[in-house]
Length: 512
Ligand code: SAH
Image (tube, rainbow, N blue to C red; front, side):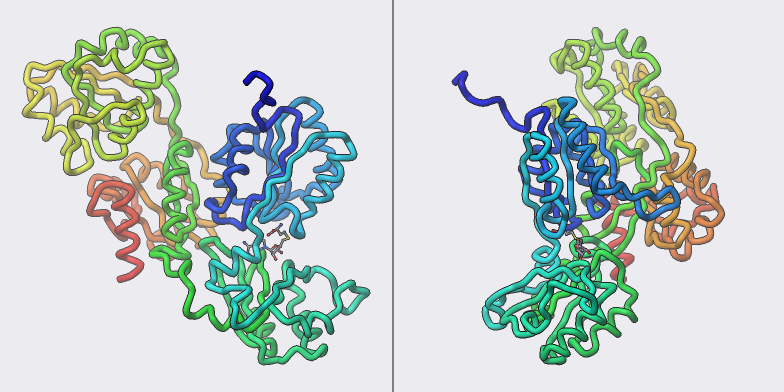
């Protein structure tokens, strides 16, 4: 089939992709596909940065209105950047909140591309109105209450020259949804009431829909402006007006998630935090990434490369982390070998996460301790290792419990550093800001070194909230002890020493 056109996405093309309303799961498959093949991604301020995990491209945020160095790039400049990047042969993704063509100026970007002769494709997204309705339990077209729905911009000022006919809107036989209407809410409801809309009509304002900080305020047309002001809602928000709002009480589900609204600082190296972040999202929580250490390859591979040809001589290979698996087996693959080099070596891992990392290389762990820590791993290995050759794929630093215990059990242990574990020098500014503002509910500490590092990286303003506004949850007694040593009070300790255990501990604490 040689006459098939080349596989899309194609270089030199711009993909205008709808990023959905904020929940990182609400992206289309086509959108994810475009991201995975992009060279450059330009994304706007409404887009959840967790979506960038689909891409290896250089990603740039085009809207940085908040923050001290904040600068909003003008639409003209964005159009021009898209054209230039495409002309230089790049595959470009322009990622826009919700659906690109619903109040998003996506059509202007498409027009600029068309005018410049740049090939483009538009990938629809889930728009805020339908997502907000579903995530708050409202059916915009509930058959008992509405036979139509209107999407309206609240950005226009109805007291000035407006294209909106409030009399027609008041008489509209269905649900009204106002985008960009929060700050004009008093004028909007007043205009509708003046035009004859019954003031008893139910209204729901949904802020940050589909996100862990989603909030809803419900009231009548007469009272909603006051209620929304009192609730101090934040952008982005939209306003749903109509009888269908009444049904909400029976149908809400999103806000019932076990960690709904909790913000959790995830103190993990950046490259391992995404999966945990997505798990937090699934539980209804907001992940805030606080990387305290970074994982890097060894300075050189000499020592590792020297061991690879004789991997088959070991009776046991022991992995005490996912990085250990990826470090050793990744290098094995890179240097042209594969897992057959392990021959009959048996494999021991510290826990289920590490076992899963082996599965990616089609390998099964022979031994997983019932408790996921070094002492327990040493304990289960002890009966098997007397007189045996053991290779431990380890980090550049960390505890030596494992090798000491195995040597004591009569093993011939070789330690091989397959990755470096380095300190970062400061926390990301946005995350530190949340911490200093007392906006974090939790920080999850998943190892003793992370606990020590966090103590080093928190500023005085942040430390002030730790133990009060921000609770610390520890993965194990060893981590708890390390945290206490550096003056970090642990509020809760996991009973299962895994990330699932950490989440379970937070759920139990929140619901106690
Ligand atoms: N293209 C986007 C809308 C862009 S206009 C879409 O299809 O959703 C920006 C407006 O969208 C905001 O002012 C707000 O009214 C609404 N909006 C976007 N995301 C939202 C969210 N997560 N929750 C509530 N409203 C949202």
